[in-house]
Amino acid sequence: MLSENRIKKMKQVEMFCIEDLVPEQHILRDIDAAIDFSFIYDLVRDFYCTDNGRPSIDPVVLFKIVLIQYTFGIRSMRQTIKEIEVNIAYRWFLGYGMMERVPHFTTFGKNYIRRFADTDIFEKIFERILSKAVEAGFVDASAVFIDATHIKANANNHKYTNELVKVEAKHYREELQKEIEKDREEHGKKPPKPPKDGGEPPTKTVKRSTTDPDCGLFHKGEHKKEFAYTTHVACDKHNFVLGADISAGNVHDSVMFDELYRNILAKFPEIEMVAMDSGYRTPWIMKQVFDSDRLPSVPYKRPMTKEGFFKKYEYAYDEYYDCYLCPNDQILKYSTTNRDGYREYKSNPEICKNCPHRSRCTESKNCQKVVTRHVWEEYIERAEDVRHSPQGKEIYKLRKETIERVFADAKVKHGLRYTQFRGLARLKMQVLLTFSCMNLKKLAKWKRKNSPPPMISCSFRLFLSQFLLSTRKPHSAAA
Image 1: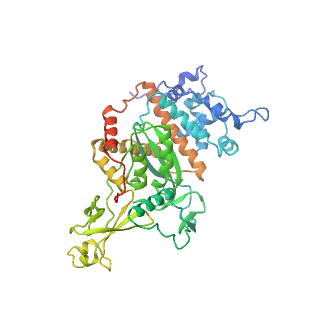
Image 2: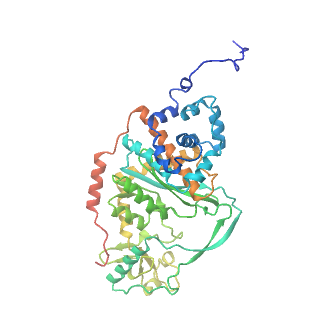
Image 3: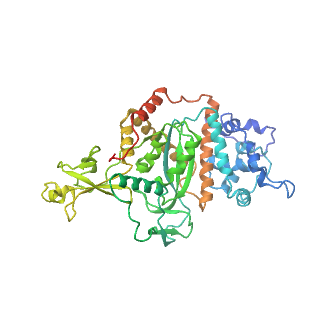
């Protein structure tokens, strides 16, 4: 039956309590019950004058406004304030009455510039929320998942300059140099000669945005070339973000691994396995993980060999004699260890000249095949053993449910697909606040349910200890 509401009640006066207007199952109720935000007073106390100036806006209210923005993925502070003006639940969360005036949308921006810029306030808020999840027993850091994703910069792709910059030396160059000298000495070789250019770093041309100089030109796979930033993230088995770092979009994922891994390891020494994608499958990263008595879980990486040629794995390495055997059962002997840390194994050109497989082996004019092997290659081989283990397969399968889900939620639900800010510092604030809110939502929901998830089983710990005991530390092949 059709009915019409002819009585207009817009101007009707009613008595009510704002507490009763917020639904019992609203996420802000869960968040308010999960954590006491009064800790913010201690964090910001030094940023305010104690005996001069007019009273400030309550800093807890200020940060709660930002948490509302990032929790619900509101695109800007201006829009956030508009939403707070008409949303009863938002007003309740801030402690504001229905008729109380909401701060102007520029208030937080001015406070950021005058007080919070170049401080660690956002890191401390992130750490405090994460610590509450740890205290509640919700974080399972027995296995961590590390990956990176790009964030589109607020920059015009057509406005840039070509700049000549120096290529930064690898941060582990000194350690690698010692390993090279040791390896050459064990093979009866002299230390490598100093470079002819006097050790000056090489240069390369990069495109630098004139709109936002801090970002970098990003291009990977099917993605189009665009100026972007990259956020490097570690999460646990229950999708709690344990740490995050930011870099320009043209910085490789593996370069940012070291600092992020050290920070995560310092906070969570219980880590037993580290799951990563193939971009992190480098000798240096595998060495770090194994040397810290943890196991890496990385996927198979397809050899980047020209089509129709033998793959590197078809050349068998003989550890006892320190040589390679080609598919035609000929020996490639050790020649030298180059400055990049690769041992070079070379074939006999006289034998290769008449080899029926030469067209699939080498196109060199002198008919000589060269196979390289990194001085830390054994760490890659140990990682391959972990990959084939049941535990390694089990942990790597969780990547799509953990770190990939974290990135999907951050981009779709929290607006981290792009940034409206410019500069590395402002973007770092956005990233930390986004992941703080994601952790906060999960913490609040699980606290309401009051059911912490199961922790890691004893069988996995047993596998870890047995694997580390059964695998020996890498040694020189010539020893």
